[in-house]
Image: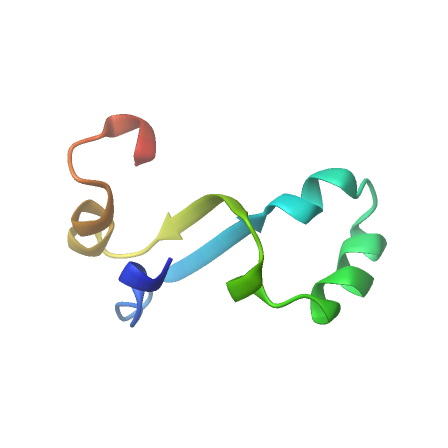
Length: 66
């Protein structure tokens, strides 16, 4: 996640923290998220959106990651 910083122009990085797996309502996630620090959480996945060059620099040629 830190390697993706700073974000390229027009890029979006979406982390999927492990604690979110146990929450089944978005309202619960909205209430819980401000109480957590992503730097202290286990991240189960990342979503990348942005310029192709930026995404490729993070995923390489691993097609399942694009």
